[in-house]
Length: 255
Image (cartoon, rainbow, N blue to C red; front, top):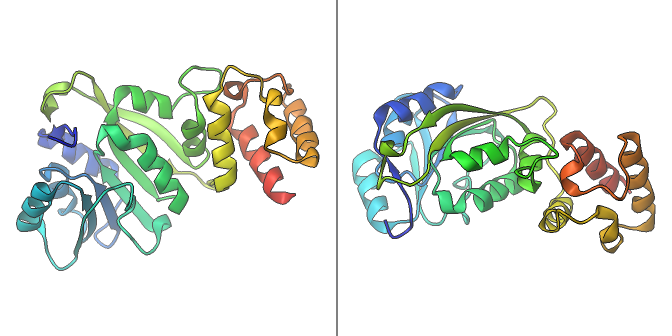
């Protein structure tokens, strides 16, 4: 419990998560923070190629004694250091996980730096799930929402009551399904950092501090692209929809 994790104890939720994943026995599945192994147990019923990352030493020893086999890759370490468990091809994995709620944002950002997994079935805090699905012009919309929506179709599949965890959290949780889109877009790292910076000042007009980050040529092209979507440099970051951010990223890397 010292790592602040609430462990899933309801088997039907673990089964539902695995059922939502489109996997076969040869697919590589990654699980972050398996805890007591409730989801791990269900994953092993459908795949023989499983990689897990567990930070807590006692839990890692327990998982190793309970589940380890020759086809299972187990890492004793921090998910932020091993966001996809050192798999060879991040774009060909499926993630099924109940990550520790305290790291969900940084962990997802770390995943996207590596690649775009085929699918992610995640059990997250309800507020987080809603934020990842948030539309532009809403308070919940942010840089991570944009990065994920550029790559995935995201849906909230199921509400999970606090009583399904131990210890019982004070918040509701949801299962979210992130299915990779055709033509999934992954933002350049520098551009991702720029978006993050802009959203830390989300109430400011982007033109008021953008010239510090882009060249004069890019600034002019940004203005043109925004204008095509009835926006200008007085727009705030939350007013810019995902497809427009994608165009801005493509333009920035092209110059």
